[in-house]
Image 1 (cartoon, rainbow, N blue to C red):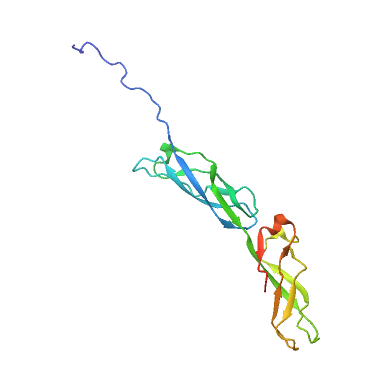
Image 2 (cartoon, helix red, strand yellow; image 1 turned 30 degrees about the horizontal axis):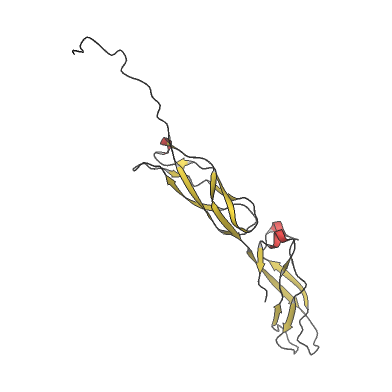
Length: 186
């Protein structure tokens, strides 16, 4: 056949090119209790064509489901956006979840004040103590148990005599004290 008898009236057509859907896998990172849900995570992306420059913006958020210490806690991901020279050719889910991570208890320190008059014993009565290392949200909710014992290493009258303290443990609501730990001796 000879096709010289026909001409194409319109040789341009319209079509849609949709963005390629990427898949991100997140891994939650363990943290020490700090009285907030903010966490961190790492990620890997699959589905990017070789040579294209696409990554996840560093403004995405990783948040634990609550502030309390615990193991294997869910980490939620949000505000995921793409960046890079070819980001407009791709789409990614703006939210998801990471593999679970841990919030471990935070260390609290205690300082003890002991003053006594010589009585020929090594018993060290604790006049008062202070706690440090806890977060403002927990002010007034933590104290030490009443089973603290103190003993001087020397029974003679002197200044700055060393005393050994034992039986130190935290007291307060279980939901709060689980977020901290303290050395049982000082």
